[in-house]
Length: 107
Length: 123
Image 1 (cartoon, each protein chain N blue to C red):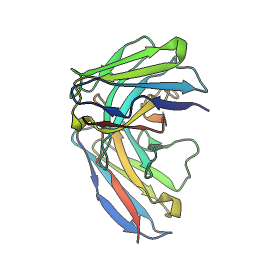
Image 2: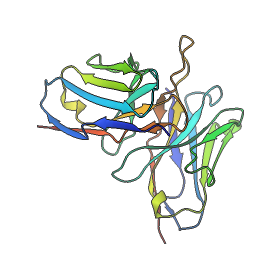
Image 3: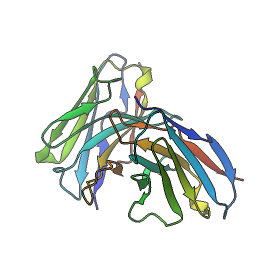
């Protein structure tokens, strides 16, 4: 299985901050990397697919980059509704695997 | 707007079979891949497997010996059966749709999810 490692596991930030979360795959996955946002008690929501394509309806402050083994999710200006847990997921091969999550909390 | 809804027992006894159904509304179940994903309380996400409208399946090897996913096109539903459950199978179970290919490219993210249903394994 491909292991997905996110960093940091958690962080504290303020509204308006620029935020970057990283995800590293245990082997190359080209650009088959997706990002999700999950709020407590809710299902994950797709933000970014194919490493950098913005899902329809997702605000443009979210962006993704990377290829191979190293990827980043960036939030350009953190909004109150962005406090949540973020997961990366590889769709290069099965079994599909997720990172352990990055919890973004209010400073 | 496509909607997915999980249904099934919230409590299952150890060693028995966990059975869940996902009902898809607002769109056809055909021409898409459909997955089950689970999340133990306070933990991360684990992909269980997927099914296509032809009935072809792909399961996570870690669960393969215990998992069956079926599809019922006439009811716009697909289902999950997990046998010989233990407390380690306690989780919120989600059904999800794999996003269709776009521009000839298939990145296979999960674009629609059910709200999730908590299944507790306990005697």
